[in-house]
Length: 318
Image 1 (cartoon, rainbow, N blue to C red):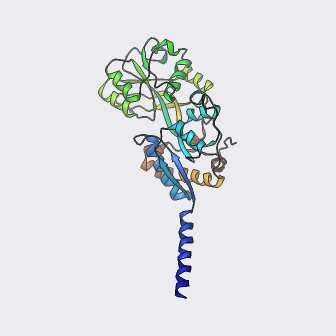
Image 2: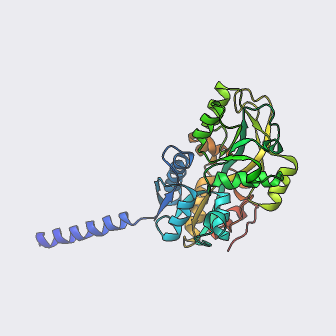
Image 3: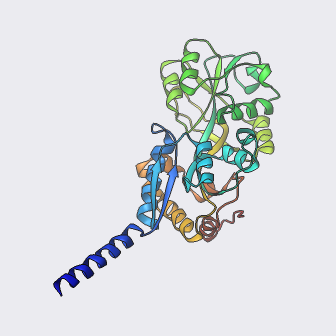
């Protein structure tokens, strides 16, 4: 009898442990490099989703936007942080995804924060985008998100890649080249303040060139994932006035196969805890229903759409 009771108790324990191990949906979130904003911010979002939505999120470091979209498509990730423009390229099968073709196995959850298109220079003769003609300008690695952002800005200003002395450099290399006088200006696309630009403006007479007016209007007309953005005065040393520019958005996406209930709960877990998230990561201050739903070119997941509808905002789903 004692042996039988021991066996029964052991079976009950095994079943209980199995039930605990399977409690809640499990999702893996692709982010970016460990030193980048995507990884750190993704960790905070994952924490709030896990604690409040009944969805257990594991955050992993990746090569960024394109890798996260491909990872969701392959079933390796269920969530990912991406630039809204790269997301648009995947959905349409253009630019960065021209060789791979259209990927539509993901859906939008929400826009998170602005990644500003920042044009930085130390040349006092450069006051507008059109002044870049004939200048040595860093426009990011060929095929990168920064590269396409820079091309869009130049095109809107009536310039081509051939009208400048194009250099294809990283943020850090661009900053060094500016300091050494090897280039005249550089495009850097990232949340402001950006460390590379902060260092430049602190130790050198560097400043931001506005991307506004007709250039901004044409960019938004040609590419709907761009939105207007203002970099507030004081963001960088020596910046005494607001600087208008364009922005894409860091965006959270999810597998199209995720359940409506899970995505509704994880969306609520983020936006219902926006103040707490902002206290842990400065980018959380940009969480808002308006920011989350504007400028998205890929359809939303039905679960996220349900949450936003409850807040009075209707979004496109598919």
